[in-house]
Length: 153
Image (cartoon, rainbow, N blue to C red; front, side, top):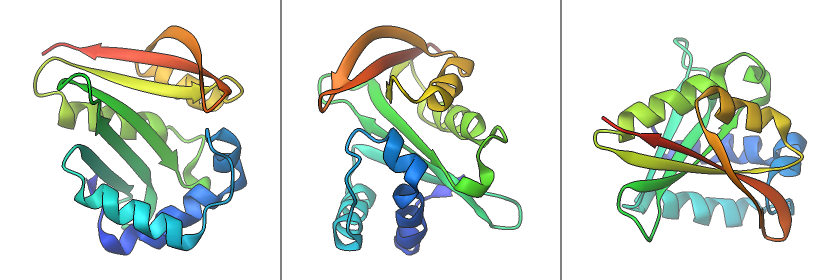
C-alpha cells in the first residue's frame, strides 16, 4: 500500500459513487465531485488521518483504507475501507485492513469500526480480522454495529 495522493481523487470518487458503497454508507446521499475534492484534500492534509491506497503489482488500484485518530484517545482510531468493485469478494478488504493495522500499531492501540447492520459483507471483513462487536448503536440515525479490535504489541 502507498500513501493516497492528490491524483487519486477521481478514482476514489468513482468508488464512493458506486451504488453498493452508497447503500453501505451512513450518509447515502449523492456526493458532488466538488464536495469530494474538498473532503479528499482535507484528509490528505489532516495530521490525525492516515490514508492509504492499495494497488496490484501492475499498479491497478484496488481500494482505500483510512484511519482517523479519535479525539478522546491518542491510541484509538476509527478505520474504514472501500474496495473497488472489480476487486470485491477476493479477500482484498481483509488484506488492506490488516496491512493498515500493522502500519499503525507500533504500540498498543484500539481500532474502531462502525458498519451498517444491513451490510453483512463489511461486517464479515472486520470479524475475520478479529474485531469484536461491542455494541449496537446508530450513526446518523441508521442502525449500526460498533466493532473493536485491541492490538497489543
